[in-house]
Image (cartoon, rainbow, N blue to C red; front, top):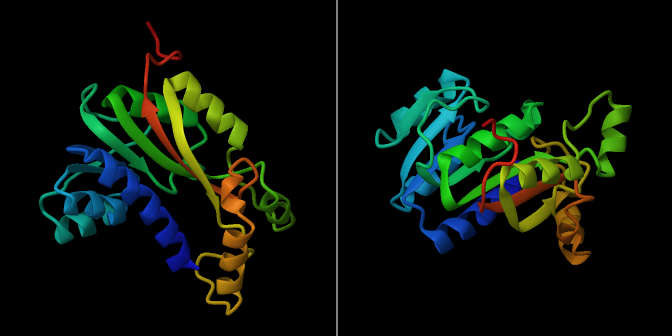
Length: 212
């Protein structure tokens, strides 16, 4: 299951990198740097941010050309309009103040820069199952889209995924069947109902929520 999820995310991020060829990239919540390394392999200058230093130390050992900074995504200690691209994969679910994070991503991106992120969708069918387990996704599709628009981003493309009922570490033999049905039924075209969502957006205008 983990291989499937990583594959979906990597293909989505790679498509934008290959099209836009960003020179300066920030990876928020980088951990050990899966996407930082991907961007670095494409000759981008990468700054990786995480609130936990352990993953960053491991990333630094893998690639000394990647700059690592221990910081909170809600208050990024970097200058305005520095980056051509910002990644934030599997991070938003751990932060309730998504509007603050989006505002910081908007501030640090250049005009026309792209912002790719993912989140678990509270509006999905899978939410009902999680509720029975005493769990919950943090954000709804509608709420995230409203934050994104208010921050000054325009959505370029979205992708829904992870419709199966298996956990990330599952090795259930039915996983290939579940993934095949997801593809066959074109469920990835229904991001507003999907359990997980990937979003590719672009900075287009002024952050409407920014303080004067």
